[in-house]
Every structure is written in structure tokens, then in C-alpha cells.
Image (cartoon, rainbow, N blue to C red):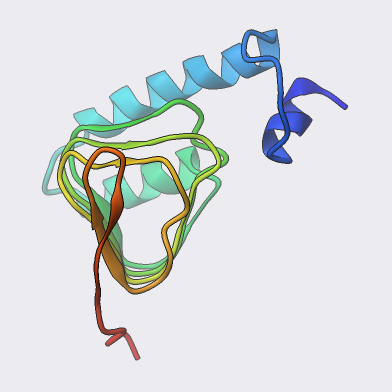
Length: 132
């Protein structure tokens, strides 16, 4: 099993493996590109998030500055707002209808229908799923 396969499977992996390092370097570049997109160009922001993340739902917005060290193992559901200065760590799944507060550091999966914030991010409150 390669180190990337281990990483993607959620197993312990070698952080300085060349393929893992290349993915980290790509994430840095992709975050810089995302953070340089015009704030009012939501379509370009969304398209870039689709390119840089593992998967992304509908109605997703992340404010500037966004940072991650991998990207391809981040999966975001529908109706997600990630406020300014968001950092997401590897292997995180963010549920549907979620708001991440400004400055939050998300270190664990986030369930559907809630607001999270803080360092590390914790659930602040549940919110109603009014997307139907």
C-alpha cells in the first residue's frame, strides 16, 4: 500500500513521503489560487473548490483566507458556509447545512445542521434544516 493510499484510507502514513509532500505542496498552491479569486466571483470560487477538494455539495462558500494541507481528502456537503480564516485539517468531512465560524480550526468531522466555531472547532448550536 502506498503512503497516499494509507493517507486516503485514514491509516498512519509517512508524512514526508514524496507523493504526500507533492499533495501538500499542491494544496498550498491551490489555496493561494483560491484566496486570490475575486471576492464577488462566486462561480469561480465554487469551481476552484470543486477542483481542489475531494467532493463538494451545492451552495458551498468559503471566505478568505482558506487553508488546508491536502484538500483531496476534504469532503463538504450541501449548504455549507465556511467563514473567514478557515483552516481544515486532513480527513475531515463536513456535513450538510453547516456554518463554520470565522477563525475556526476544524479538526474533526462536522455533523449535519449545526454551527461550529473555535480552536479546535466545536459544535456551538444545532440549526434547522430548511433546505427542502
